[in-house]
Length: 98
Image (tube, one colour):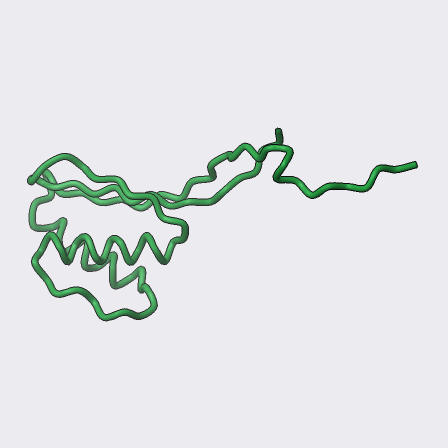
């Protein structure tokens, strides 16, 4: 078996209402959209219309939410490289040399 690397992003959020939540996303845009969606849900704001994710706007919104209670509210987006095992059946077949 060989290994390949897959890039993912994790979003970690927590507040005074319970344990922290962690979600895994396949792209940075998905992670920023999820941050915006989570903060809006926790604040009771209406969902943002569908459009390109804006990391700066999501950061400002999340920081404003966090400033309401600095002791117990937090958020973090982290990139990761995960090693994935690729079985031999997943590799292309090479013709046998003579």
